[in-house]
Length: 172
Image 1 (cartoon, rainbow, N blue to C red):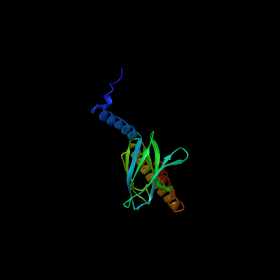
Image 2 (cartoon, rainbow, N blue to C red; image 1 turned 180 degrees about the horizontal axis):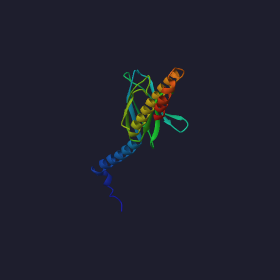
Image 3 (cartoon, one colour; image 1 turned 180 degrees about the vertical axis):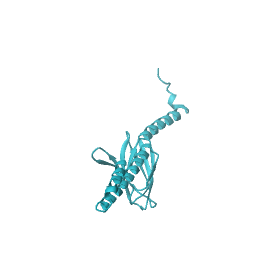
Image 4 (cartoon, helix red, strand yellow; image 1 turned 120 degrees about the vertical axis):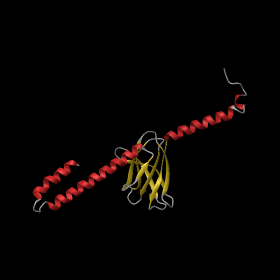
């Protein structure tokens, strides 16, 4: 049984059908679309890049130029959760764990992105930042212990200091 010939000419059915098709297309597109926006302080019309991080290499996905105040916005199509690098250069980047449909917002200093950046809109990226912060603190503490160890190594009283330094090092 088919629709009557006047079904699509009816003033009610046709607009509803058009709206339904538009909604479905938009809904499907949003699920695959990732938005990364933010502000990089100290940048005036400079490039920002996003790479997909694979096991052994990074694949460029998108790039954009920041505005005069350092703001930027990128729309990226993702099929599945992925590790991404938001970067200004190969040595100046932050790692994101992004899922399709997320709207990630980042604020950072452009000279050294990893130092004190903030991220919101992505649970995975917030966890990656927490891990990165913890790792940075651990490396700093380890470096401090090693510096003290090397400095005091040939000094009198090192034999009593050495076990304390080793204990502090193993606690990390």
